[in-house]
Image (tube, rainbow, N blue to C red; front, top):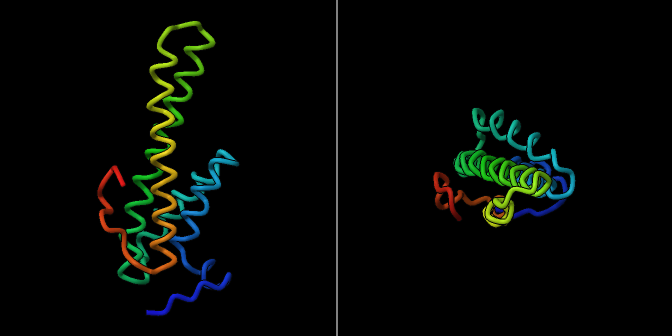
Length: 125
């Protein structure tokens, strides 16, 4: 098994690119949308066996990001409206954002090693 980690081979590693886009969401706020679209597009044409598990994993990770954003929006709106649930919703939002980030890093590591995701259908790690 070849583990070529040159820049060109990493950019050709489609699951790696999706992981980078997901991690970029923490800075851009929108690159995860591009990542999930690519995951759906790439899923139909997975070139190698290990890639297919990554796309299922990435799509679930996107929904964790989306849920974190929804909880964050609820927390912000409740704080602005002076409703007492803001603090209760902020904790799950943070936990989901951390979980999505950890999942993205794990997917990136496995993509570089060209290994399938061990539990692609899990919502946890």
